[in-house]
Length: 461
Image 1 (cartoon, rainbow, N blue to C red):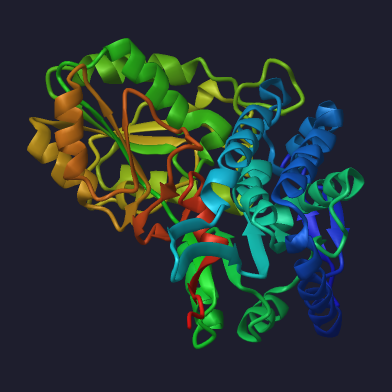
Image 2: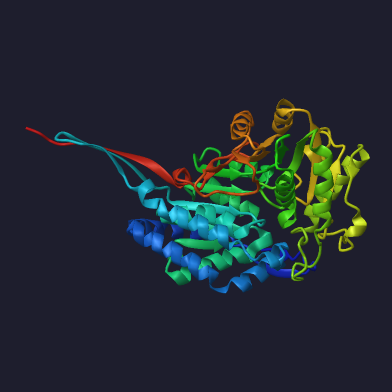
């Protein structure tokens, strides 16, 4: 079979390549996972939790190497380290709530009847993980999936092939059986064949809308559960009473961090007319302070995009907006490292509107459009004028207003005075073309388990 190549955004070299499993080998791996799952589920919950936490601890024994590998694979500057804070936070929280969430509930224990509501693992979980935050996006389902007693098969993005291997190595070294957690390399036809053959009890996919549609199509008629986190075009709204400096600092960081390649990154900002000019001036100053360059340079604050084709999409959106009347405020001369390929200068666009692709299509890069609004109603209408709904960020000193505005926004999460963040105690979910399902919080365990009822009548004479 044709090898899958990982092209590094750092220098365009082939950093890693792996041959995908053949169809027969892939089906055999799925069969081994299914066979191993029952014994894993039979282990005490506390033992599974301990092994999962030991796997995460083992992974983090060589953080420096992992950070360097991340830079080679997807371009994140090494100065920012890894994803270890959120990874530990999510692992710890899901571990802490496992017993409370998964312990059967005794509805009645009487002389005649015992009634119990329980949850049991779905069997084998298939995780198809993305490259932008490759460790923590996998962990979101991997940790609760294993803790709940499932076997897990992980197919990582071709852009971050090494991440899946690192996770499997660490968990195996910690004592999780090899067939219970497998990292596999697959092509699209084999992936779809496994799903269509009902090899999995649940499929978790993070990626494009088109990819999510392909997963649903492959699963059609199998009644396999799916969790799909797809596109996003997350907005920020700066009200007249906002703390301007805090809004600029957080929203621009939310737009530009990780070269804008964040699921919940800020891609469009609506600013009350009374603050608009000042916000734009401060935002331009903030972005001009970024330094685009090689991710291994400690002075670099903005690395390359993960692939030159991703950067080409953003360049096309910017060019289309400018041709339609938008103004680009960041002088490309300030970013000599922009090479026309994966290294892309950041950009702020004004004089934009929703007829432009950059304000409606997902960009997933270091560009943000800023529009002036006159009031809450106009901001809400613009925020909802999107096919996506993952998060929305509201900047105000009035918590009541933020809650009222949030209730009118079609999205999965509402932030007040923060953005680009994931709280493990809250469900990570979206609506519209952002997909379906939810991970993390106690609700995240519902995706990786199924309900089971026990109605036990005692025989009486």
